Image 1 (tube, rainbow, N blue to C red):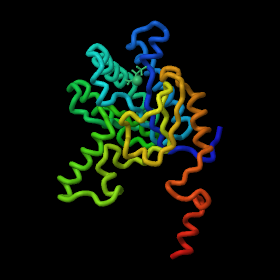
Image 2: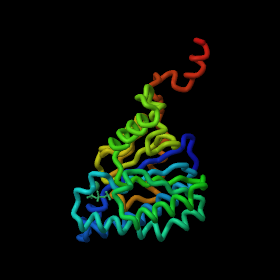
Image 3: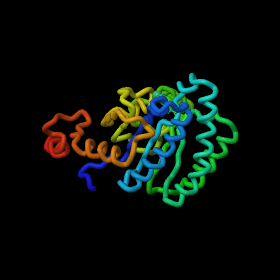
Length: 245
Ligand code: IPE
Ligand code: MG
């Protein structure tokens, strides 16, 4: 399958693990476990389609509001999944990068995160960005803070703040996908999603598979991206600009 227009960066809010489990009379934690299988699938599909960056919202700052049982299960699941997968991902040329307020995590999990990031840091086939204890508002604030500390002033343009965001060095997402029927951004990459195409699907995250990913990619292929330009001159903006120069 080939596309005329392929997203370079796909960002996903993996939602619906709990409802997937409830609908089967299973515990929510079983849904999270099933969600890991879907993560492995979407990484495989991204490699197949030549996607360069895949960002996954795994745990938001607001998810600490959940029960202790669920959050501690999730932390253990992150650890086990990372431990079991990072060397395999490395062998496939995948770079693993974490974004979020990582200091909230245990030394054990932090050590595993560091190990995975360090081992894979020179890989360039696909970058998998895992957002944990992340929020878009936090990202903007920490970037402003870092900018002020380093530059002793405030940023004057969006481009000058971008290198201070957690996503520094990465292109902004072209395609955003959210599963489970909810149509909201839920504090994911607020700054970076400024011109991203938004795709929503009813399926719960554990049911997200290669076919649904391809449906989203086909939908993206039909989008006319204008980035604020007018409909008629989006493709010849450079020509028009040149004429005026
Ligand atoms: C998404 O599934 C996974 C995480 C946020 C870790 P949910 O746990 O939000 O599932 P629902 O929305 O309750 O069904
Ligand atoms: Mg949810």
